[in-house]
View 1 (cartoon, rainbow, N blue to C red):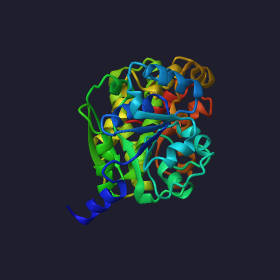
View 2: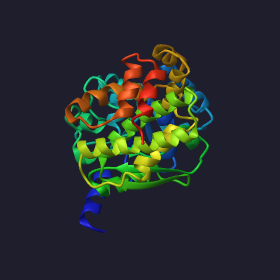
View 3: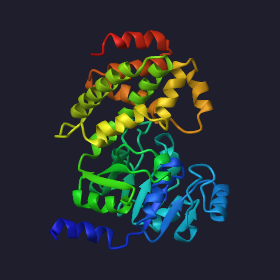
Length: 342
């Protein structure tokens, strides 16, 4: 075993204490993965009533209720400080729009913790990716930050359908250790050192999925969708290569795979949101009808602001922005976009 692997093992230990912050569908799916590997899980659930129901039934009353948990292996807490204090590795799985509010009461330092983000969005107020926010605002060392990416919907995890995830960390030996925490018979993992590219790609694919949904809602068919997604991966590559220019294979599952499943899957909340817009729903009406957050709604505004600096050609992002925030008719805006695709 080389020195770096020994260091990674020393940081985590043989049986690291693991905490989970978040109780939505993706958090619940990650809890299922973790409990295949860890002896015990510290789980922060904000709603006290949900905690009581969880303890009583062994099921999340609000999300993925088909999953039965062994609550003897879980310590639930409504106090984020308690979970962080008692954990060495923390999985952060809340919508990006709410992460600052969830963490605002945190008084325990994260400086000696490992934090893994499974959030596919940006901090709306700052436009930061979660990794940058954890490092600059929460004091987590950059080489102790992990990012989960890849084509994986929570609903299929609940069904134990084979899925693949990528664990990114600048310390690749730590990435391997993080990956072991979620690997199981229905989850295959790979590792990467591209925390910036995987995060930005995960943000952008939600915007692309909204576009896919809008065109679907307008009645465009599969032939057009293929062209749209082909252009979408090129747009993602242009942006991530400009913002963080390192060698990466944009065709790998962490980038292209995640884009494909988000644009095509029946479980994709961003595609669903876009489809409603294409069918004539207002933004507010679509948001009210959906029970889950469409991260792409917030991401579109943030990426548009970030791109004011970089000036990358992003016609699909611009189209979605003009529909959501400029209140341009989807019919008109999408027709204009079709003239720019190739």
